[in-house]
Image (cartoon, rainbow, N blue to C red; front, side, top):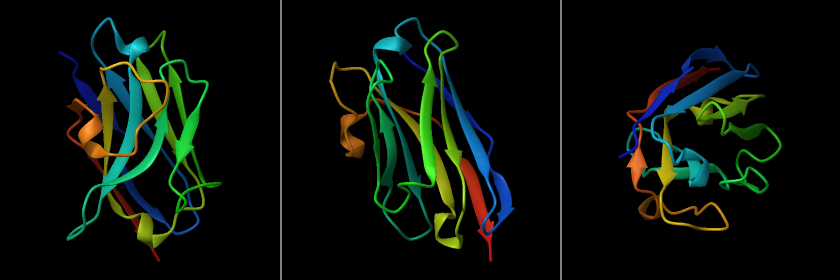
Length: 126
């Protein structure tokens, strides 16, 4: 079992920055692909960013490319999402997710991930 705990959400003005962190329990974290997803009210959960187990490859939704950066520290069992130039449309609950089955990429589908955090609210005011 893997437990994921997100932190770092909050209220920020448009154009500002936030850094989300996800702390994972378990000895096999370094073998998991990790993803960040978000869900706005009334909308489906959507892929934001993903990172392979080694950290070598990173993937982004078009809507956040160039503004968000995903990273991981396997020694500390953490994955982070640096969010810059935030927009009101980035407002959502952000979730960290882990995929235990081996993959050489970071899938964009929610069903590809086995473990989820409880989410952290990000609110961007205009």
